[in-house]
Amino acid sequence: MRERGIEFVDNTAPGFAACVGYCPTNEIAVKIARELQEKNLYVFMSAATEGKSMAEQLAEEGIEMGWKTRLVPYGGDVTATVHALGFATRVALSFGGAQAGDFQRVLRYNKNRVFAFVLALGPVDDEKHAQAAGAINWGFPTISETDIDSILPTGICTYEHVVSPVPLDRIVSKAIEVRGLKITIAKVPIPVAFGPAFQGERVRKEEMYVEFGGQVGLGFEFLTTKKLEEVEDERIEVIGPEIDNVHEGGQLPIALWVDVAGRKMQPDFEPILERRIHDFLNCAHGIFHMGQRDINWVRISKEAREKGFKFRHFGSILHAKLHDEFGKIVDKVQVRIYTREKEVLELIGIAQETYKQRDARLADMTDESVETFYSCTLCQSFAPNHVCVITPERSGLCGAYNWLDGKAAYQINPTGANQPLQKGRVVDTVKGQWQGINEFVHNASHKTLQIFSAYSMIDHPMTSCGCFECISCVLPSTNGIMVVYRNFAGMTPSGMKFSTLAGMVGGGVQTPGFIGHSRLYIGSKKFISADGGAKRIVWINRELKQELGEILQKIGEREGVENFYEMIADETVAVTEEEVLAYISEKGHPALKMPPLF
Ligand code: SF4
Picture: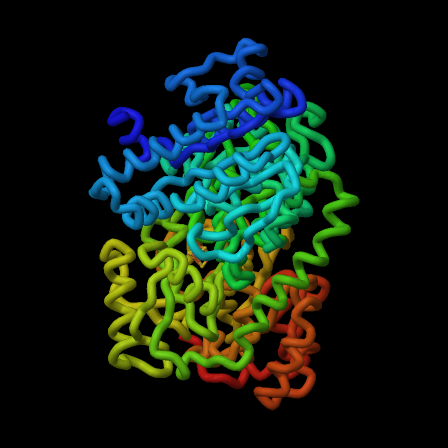
């Protein structure tokens, strides 16, 4: 009893399932037993019905039973079920400090610490019905295959008390949901090593077996909330080719679509969970992930392929880690991995519309209206000294985290990567410097940065990791700046392609004259406002310029510059800095009349 009971205290065994009755076939009995074992639960079996119990069915199939396998037969008589409750009572007496007879304390201990429930299999007679009602006094609900009176409101049990009828193929997942059992997965079930030590690992082109998305490819990742009954926990599907049908060096589109459900889950938490896809996948040895939302880029190494890594293992990782890190709010996780262009194109619009809605939530907030900003240090696995300071008017440079997301992330995990930052004394209003923020950045950057300017790309600009959506850099002779989006593969007027620029800007160092930032930040009134603001933009790659059309029109109206959109060059009219200068001179771009940038 002590040896087993301690497992209920240290959570090696979260609880038990008291299975009464029998299943229509031995095969179903084995399946249910296996499902319960996978969740690390003990299975106490008793009460034969019509002469048969689940334990006898397992015995007929040659399944090993006993304490070691956690499949424990208590006896065929209906009264044998009391041993399961006796076990729970003794755990409360031994480890919960309850005295014999103190039924309230026994109830409280079991309700809060022992995740147990009754599975009523097959017909339920009056005796079994009475037992189900009795189990409620320990905080244990009953889930019945047979249609018996349900007792749904919460009260003594954490959630519902008696739920029926539930088909046998869903009875275990329903029991876990009703009991509020949190799934813990001791080891992520994939054929390659897994851990934070692999997070900073890159998979170079020559080491790569297959890649998805990236600069020229199509891809997105998206996490959404569903109702509990709409999500089947651990359901993982690959729609399109699996790795076995892809040749070495292959390039595929990808959609990682994650449905989560939980009684405490809120749509506001979606961006926080979605952004963690990045570091969860990177923990797998031989898997490289970069970017987020609809600019993700994933590679699988040849070594991982040889070890048996499949596309479906992306789902295994996300299922395990979302339960592990967000167990308080997530009860169920299902993942679909699309690797065919047709479906990815069909779905990407839904994701993009949601990204837009998430970004729009902050529309009327300003940096002055709050005293608190939020930090993000999630990307320190790649750039150990990098810190994003997220303000209402400046989202994280990946574009996936805004101020509200930082706030929600802190609510979910108060000791996590998103901490509230008190602005404190104002050091410089124009550049956006505050004493509280400087102090935080100094510590969080491991004392490599002293000063942080929220609104300047020249004077102590924000550092970059590698996840920025865009890079802005100064084009000195134009007195302006260019902006390039990460999927633009061509040459820019800086004389560098995006990949070379990314090497200069990333890595967590301040690079005056260069910043990584989100697309959305361009439309913010605080976009490099200390350096003259968005009026400095003289070149944007065409695709991004078109996408930002409305925003650029609004910037023109806000700054009193007519035809601002037309004054900005792109690669179709200017590829070198000289060509940009010639173009903007002809158009009378306002940057030419602004004070010098340096
Ligand atoms: S880029 Fe910044 S905001 Fe985005 S996840 Fe990384 S540290 Fe956080």
